[in-house]
Every structure is written in structure tokens, then in C-alpha cells.
Amino acid sequence: MQSKKFSKLEQPLLQWNDVALMAGVDEAGRGPLAGPVVAAAVMLDELHPIKGLADSKLLTALRRERLFDEIRSKALCFSIAQASVEEIDTLNILQATMLAMRRAVLGLRLKPKLVLVDGNRIPVMQIRAEAIVKGDTLIPAISAASILAKVWRDRSCLELDLQYPQYGFARHKGYGTAQHLAALKEYGPCAQHRRSFAPVRDALARHSS
Image 1 (cartoon, rainbow, N blue to C red):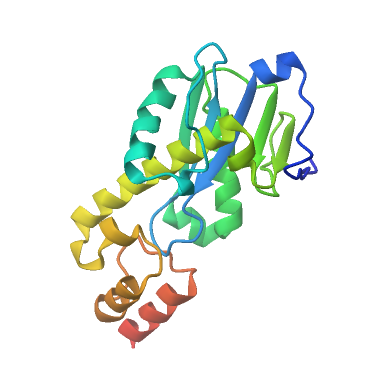
Image 2: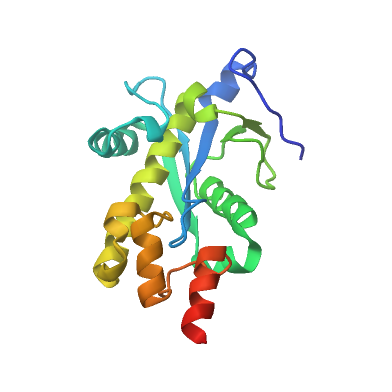
């Protein structure tokens, strides 16, 4: 299925039944050097609106946490899924992201008539789907999905920090910060580092030689 891109001035035209059964999808964690990539799918309930939905990157951590609970309590349904580090290294990060998105949609309690995905690509599904560039700032359901995915992944990084405190996952969430790169250089990769990513691959080569 071909994806469709929409600008801020050209949003998709939805019929009332599409709106009622529309799912927004977004991901978190494509760029980090460690941990899974997480995707969420959300179907909002127009009878229970949620104020303050926005791109998760524009919200404070506290605001995201509060919205995380509100979305889960007010949405018609939601689903959070992931692709593992092993799947990322086997498939590549793009295909692993598509896999996580597809799992999130298939995990919904209700079957949507339309799936709107943030970005310019869509996973292969037997459901009508469209990609919307900057969708996390345009479509509330995608904003909600971005918040669920971000908070879920950040929490998984806190768990990684307990397992591997030397890397500082609680602070950088797996991204390639100077602190993280220094830890990689000193300790080498742990089991949750993505070996297909160049900085990890280089660190592994240094510690294997």
C-alpha cells in the first residue's frame, strides 16, 4: 500500500465513521544506540476528550506521565508494542519500526477502519493506512500514540539502568550522548546495545581485539 503525505494545510478528509474508528500510530526509539523501538496505536473517544495532546517531544516528562495515564483511561482502546534489539539488528531499524507499528495496530481491541501513521512510511497491513508528515502535531490520536510510546520506552530505559548502571540509561535513554559514548568506549556494549549501529559496532570491535 502506498503511503500518503499531508502538509499542515492539507489534512486527510475523513468520513464520520472513519473518525469514530480511526487509530493514530507513532513510535519512539529509532535513534538510540540501545533498547527496543516502541510503537503505540490509539483510538480516541470523542465523548471523552483529552486536553493538551501534543507531540511528546514538546512536553515535559511530568506532563507526558500525566497524559499517559489519562490516555489509557479515556481512549476507546490502545496498544503498545515493540521490536527487540535482536529484531533491530536482524531487520534494520526501519523494518523493525514497521514491525512494532504493525504489532501495535494488531493489538488493538477494536479493529480500526483507518490507521494514520506519523511520518512518511506505513507498515504493511490489511487496513487502510495513510502516513502524515508531522502527524504528531496535527492529529490528536497520533499525538496520544507518541506519548504512550515515549513514556513506555523511557520507563524501559529506567529498567535498563538498574541492570547496567555504568551506562547511564536513566539519563540519556540510550541516545548517543558524550556520556554514553564514553561508557561504550570504557565498558564495551551490553546485551541491549544495537550492534548494527556504528558506534556500538566500533566499540565491540575495540573490546574484541
